[in-house]
Length: 305
Image (cartoon, rainbow, N blue to C red):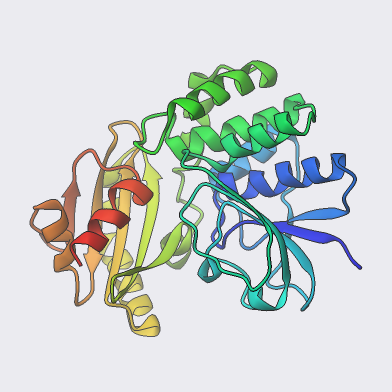
């Protein structure tokens, strides 16, 4: 039998990529034959982390041969995974999102209500008495900083902060300095096409019976991103038509001020007005204090759908 493949979700973020690497390291230390993979191109933020460590990105795959053993990290959602997920053997899942997977067989499933998968990974290393070296610690703390927006996101827990503090000591980094440099690196959209920007961190989600995509980008200046508004809208309309969507919400989050604005298109765009009690003006809605898609967007949008 070949290697067990480890991968996160499509349109991978820093948590997804680092989790595949960190989980692969743990499994290898436990004597298992595994390989870290990814289901998409890395973003600028993740590129910053890997360049900082002098590391290559995991191998890019589109699917896996039927019967292959796999480990899922940072997601359990089949819609975010390989197209033939039902035909592979899922050995383990390590995540921090809602459970979105059922299987006809038992498996190891570890998910906790924390801000980042790496907070769960930290526990797995400790529980298995596996050393966390400087490189692994840097990967872990980078993901926690990313997923919690340097602890500003409402998804951040005291557990995330505690683990990140311990990891930063091992990594020998100043979290505030390194973290802000990393987050700012992730806001550079200059080398991406409009289509790529719309897919950088896009997640399909059903708002009750409304087929939707909620995408998000981080920036140090929302106005700079909105200079591309007409091109973004055209790209969004194309994706809506191709996927028969009811709603496409493109969230632009200011990592400095911890606020967002969103371009909202589709027949069900009014859901956003109901959810936030704000008017959509020229397809844009103000989302004051909103930074987390998982906690401040998807639940409230679903509730008002």
